[in-house]
Amino acid sequence: MQRVIVNKETKGMLIGFIGILIFSLTLPVSKIAVLSFDPYFIAFGRATLAGIVALAYLLFKKGRIPSKADFTKFVVIALGVVFGFPIFTTVAMTEGSSSHGAVILGMMPLATTVIGVIRFKERPSLGFWLVSLLGAVLVVVYALLKNLGSFTYIDGLLVLGGICACVGYVEGGELSRKMNPRIVISWALVISLPVNIVMSYFTFEMHYLNASLIAWTSFIYLSLFSMFIGFFFWYEGLAIGGIARVSQVQLMQPFCTLVAASVLLGDSLTVMNLVFAFLVVSTVILGKRMLVKRT
Image 1 (cartoon, rainbow, N blue to C red):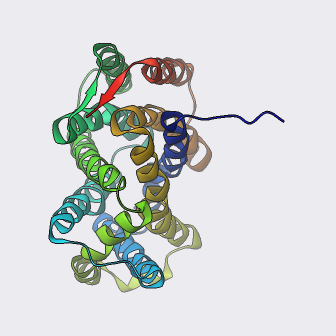
Image 2: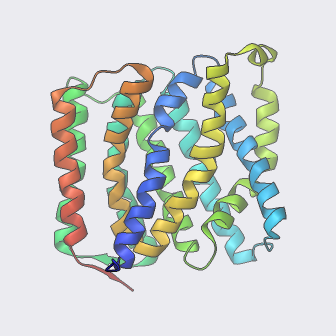
């Protein structure tokens, strides 16, 4: 049997896509969770549970204490993916729909690329930039069509959450080039654990103990998968294939989320959804063919 050789960029994209599949359930599951819990409890509580699991993982693996230089990077990661993204997006889900939020967050690949270029001097080609911009334009047009041509404060919360996530993605992806991706997200969670424990205590209500099995299952998914396990794959993919290249896989996340929303929440899949899905996936394929120089 002939052995199939996969280059680093393709391998990185495939591994990163597993992480994206895990992340794609975050908004629909958050929508389910906010029906039973306060959004701030969800944001801080899920980080607390994930942090406890991460601490156990670090103790089991005997993870070394971060250096002073790395500690600052972990703080940046925590601000982005442990605090910023969960808080902004969960609050947005109290009124907004997961389907609409999914498409707004479709602009994240371009933001990740821009931040990666500025922070770590990746040098995408002009063609790569044009394809990335095309993908971003497609999701913006989609959002406007779905929202009657205007943006709301919900869109603003989602954009802020997306930017926070991108900062955490870039810093974590680069740090994962010299450190195990599991260790990276684990330390980010553990460093922020004291704050999350305190905030979880103040946002917890006793009646949450009577919440349904579905509500608590959603909470656990957000904690263990969206906040922890998903980053195992995402950071490893970014480290292997490069931030600029692998971040384009995020363009498929909005449409994975649309399918998840259809299954979990009963949202309808329209022809427009499918058309834009095809167009956006096409930009990912084109982007993969464009040259990206890494310095």
